[in-house]
Each structure stands twice: as structure tokens, then as C-alpha cells.
Amino acid sequence: MRQGQLTLSWREARGITLLAYSSDWRRPFCFCCKSFWEVFQTSWYQYYMYNVSGQIKRERWAEHFQEILNRPPPPEPPEIPDASETLEVNMNPPTKAEIRKAIKTLKSGKAAGLDGIPPKALKDDINTSTDMLHPFLQKVWENEKMPMEWKKGYLVKLPKKGDLSSCGNWRGIILLSTTGKILSRIILERLRTTLDQKLRDEQAGFRQRKSCTYQIASSRIIIEQSLEWQTSLYMTFVDFQKAFDSVDREVIWKLMQYYGIPQKFINIIRRLYENSTCQVIYDGKLIDPFKVETRVRQGCLLSPTIFLIVIDWVMRASTTGTKTGIQWTFARQLGDLDFADDICLLSHTRMHRPNCPADNDIDPANVDGDEDDDNDDDDDDDNDDDDDDDDDDDDDDDDDDDDDDDDMMMMMMMMMMMMMMMMMMMMMMMMMMMMMIMMMIMMMMMMMMMMMMMMMMMMMMMMMMMMMMMMMMMMMMMMVVVVVVIYY
View 1 (cartoon, rainbow, N blue to C red):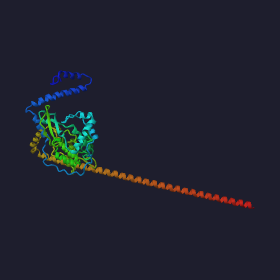
View 2: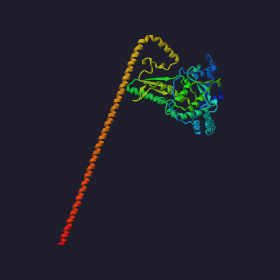
View 3: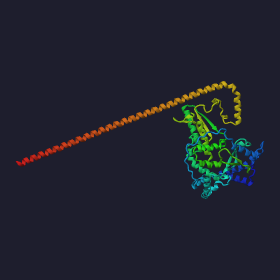
View 4: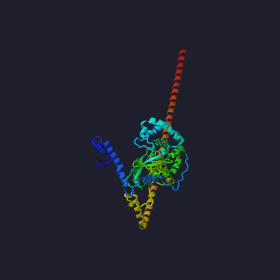
């Protein structure tokens, strides 16, 4: 630190050293890291950026991010049908309870946007902040007019791996207004539950009770079942380039209508996107603003949900009406596992990766290589196409045979499962019939016992009647004898 420091004074460097010798190592470690990276980013990075060949100027940063945030519209806009129904959500203006809850969810460590209000300032006195924002947000809700501060953002660049003289190796983070995030949070909470029911179960990104580990566990189960059943399994991983930056906004409004989002919500979100601008922060100064006409808003709480709507429709349109994927259950097939824009396509055959070389020819080290390596591989493949036509034909025949074998195996497995289910149903029917017969026998035995009891009761009654008659006869005879004796 002492040798590499450029702006730290001797006293500050000595203080860092003394903290390092204390018993609490977490505080000095975090302080050292923060101090070092502040010096490193504000001095070495700026020196490096200004002294590489082909110097990158401030205007280049604005040009670079303007190209990323303003993509051309799609050549053929998709045909999106109208919504069959509208989601049942609360359409009333925001309440104080919703505003208070939205303020509590703000993260205190986040930076402020154009309004200069950090989240911690609102959270320090939530009741006062709620009373001040409530009439303002109600007016915005009723008039559907957004403040210009909500449409502007500051873009902060963060380094990624690779050559830092290239603008493509820097990530842009946009800082938005904190008060605008409160309205976005209220809309998100109203839409989340009802909209989540309309999304595909294969998607686990930005959803409640689902995560990346959820998809990892599903992938592990699929692989283990494939090994246990000895079936072929192909998994193709897809990662879209600049996925969030490539979404066309006109498509967003149509898809929001298709998924049944009320027009009031669409109008408010659309006003947030209209005439939005951005300014790049470079060397502590602001570069001239430029318009942002494509992509979902970075830093907005609604952006992940809006992107899920887009990717859900893309996957739904590409898989509907086609028999793809693996047999996940007896009545359902699983074609893909999604986490936002990261997609894993599943198949028992090679249908998801046509014109792919044989499995033994794939080099795992070059699967995720750089673009230059991919171009070199393409050139080598073009040069060797004429020499390998016969081998490719043989590979295609082998692939067809493998596909036929896999289809036959799948058919046999399905037939075996159907036979097992039929046998189980027959066994259940036989058990039910046996139970019914036993119940009938028991009922007959009970009836016979009741009849026997009735007969015994009748016999006892008859015996009692006979005894009574005999007693009466004896009494009569005794009376006759007494009368005769008295008379004579």
C-alpha cells in the first residue's frame, strides 16, 4: 500500500498499518480494500485508458454506450395476438401503506440518481417520507405524467475481465431516481402474483420461490435419471448476447397487452420509457446526454419482470405445436430449463444441435472460446469440407441410426409403462372385487345371525306362552278340586 499509493497521505497509510495489527481483522481488511481500489480506479485506470494506442476519449464512451442502448428495430415485427383476458389487479392510486412498504424494501447502500436522494434518507424517517410522497405519487398516478428526473439516468462504468482498452470490456450501470423506484415497486407488487401464474414453469429467473439452484437441482435429477434408465441426453446451453439491451420497446407494449396487464399500468410504464436519456460519468464529469430508445430500463425494478414476459413469449412461440424435449412425466415433456436469458435445451436426440460434429470431435476447452477462435475454427471447417463429405455422410447415417434406436427405446419404455399401469389397474380392480365379495359374505352372515336370533326369540316366547297356559290350567284344576271338596 505504501509503495503503490498515489493519493493517500503518510498518516492515512500509517493508520491502515495500525488497523491491520488490531484484533478485529474484518474492519481493517475492508478499509484497506476500499482505499486501495479508490486509488487504483481513480489513477491507474485513468492513466491506462489515456495512454494506450488509439486513445479512448470521452466522446468514445458516449458513442459506445449509445450504440448499445439504441439498437435497430426488428426487420419483421412479430405477430402478437390480443389478450383473451385482463389480469385482476388493484387499479387504485398508491396508498400510504404501499408507499411505506416500498420505502422499507429500498437498499440503504445504493447510490442516488439525478434527484440526489439516497435510499437511506427516505428510510431514516419513513413516516415523514410517506406523507410527503403520497400526494405526489397520487397525482402522477392520476395524470400519467412523469417528472423528467425519472427519465434521466447516470451511467457508471465498471471494469470486466479482458483488455480494458476496449470499451466492450466495461459494464455500464445506470443510476435512476430513488422516488421513481418507489412507484415501480408498487406496480411490481400488484402485478407479481397474478402475472407469475401466466408464465411457464420452466422459467426460474426473478420469480418467487425459485432460483438458480432450483434449475441446477432439476438438471442433476435429469442427468441421474438418464444414467439410470440408460437413455441418451443432449443438453444445449444458450446465452443471448446483449439480451436485455436488444429488446424492442414496441414489442414490449404489445406483449404486456397479450399477457393481460391493464392499460393503466402499461401507460404509466410507457411514460417512464418515453424520452429517456442517459449521461456517462467519466473522470468525475458528465458527458453530453443521449437518448435511450431500446432495451428495458437498467436499474428499474420492473425490468426483470418485463424481460421475463419477452423471453417467456419467445420460448412459448418456439415450442408450441412441436414435439421437443425429453419425457419428464408420463403425460408431459420437458423441452428446456430457463434462468432469465440463460437457457438449457433438452432432447433425447441431436435435434437441438443440427450440423454438429461427432461427440468425439468436440473439444470442451473450445466450447466457450473467444470470437477469434470461433472464426479460425470456421475457416478450418470451410477448408476441410470438400475432403470430408463422405465422412459426413457416414456420420449422418450413424446419427440417423442412433436417432431411430433412441426412438425405438422411447417407444418400448412408454409401452412398458403403459403395461405396468394397466396391470396395476387390473390388480386394483381385483382387490376391489374381493373386498366387495367379502362385504357381501359378511352381510349375509349377519343376516343369518339376525334370523337365528329372531327364531330363538320366537321359540322363547312360545315356551313362555305354553308355561303360562299350563299354569292357568293347573290353577283351574286346583279351583275345581277345592270347590268339589267344599261341596261334599
